[in-house]
Length: 369
Image (cartoon, rainbow, N blue to C red; front, side, top):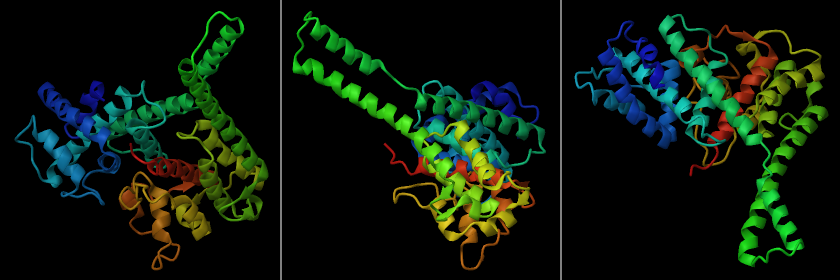
């Protein structure tokens, strides 16, 4: 987000000089390319931007810390190397690069690619976090959150647009043949037919998403729990709704789909439930439910252990199911996710966050090109 670089640099220096802002913008430029081409580096950068590069699981030796440090030292050779001195500076530069990734490529982004992945991760990361006390840091994160929201909504809309161009071309071809105006060879016809069938397949998948979502909602039955939603506690029903609605959604998911989590809970329990702490909600989330959230393809990337600020509930669930944790919320939850342990939300809100995280995990399970 080069146009907002001054605001981003202010998180480390309230009154930066024009020269410093120029140098930080210059440092962000190569990072934009690095983040676009390296998914692991992008995820680590997002973790650092959201929670801080000086917070676990990141450290001085982390590849993303070294990458951002190299970029900053390019135009600023006197820049300190110790993370205890430069964490906020690194956060600002990485934030500029991430912001630029979201805004510069937004117009051309489809349902795949680094910009959309970054947007989905940020929406997951910010949903439950409280407002930052530091004014300048709060401004930076709010700018990124807004850019992520705009991009994800645009990408979801583009994913669901129906196309008729190929079918119209095929219809035109048939019409000209019938009118005997033109003779076409097989080489002329086959590409048009293939394109029309591919267009039909794509449009059918969009129709199928709507049918599967509505059928699941009307059935009111959870496959993960193998029970009717009404027979589960509100927290468990919301969790299952979040996972199973996300699994039936095209990627990226639309804003209307996440609202179905609340609708499913109202249909099964007549309300979205009373607010509860995560420590209370997590007691209702069984191993089969958590497995449904976390189990993905063997090539999947995005281990919640490495990116707790991006996947906070997945991290908490993964930790809670260990033998030593016995279903309890890990004591380090607030430290690594940035979310207060005392944070309260309705079961529907917890379920909506599960939905966001499952969407991110599914996106990460796609094989990289």
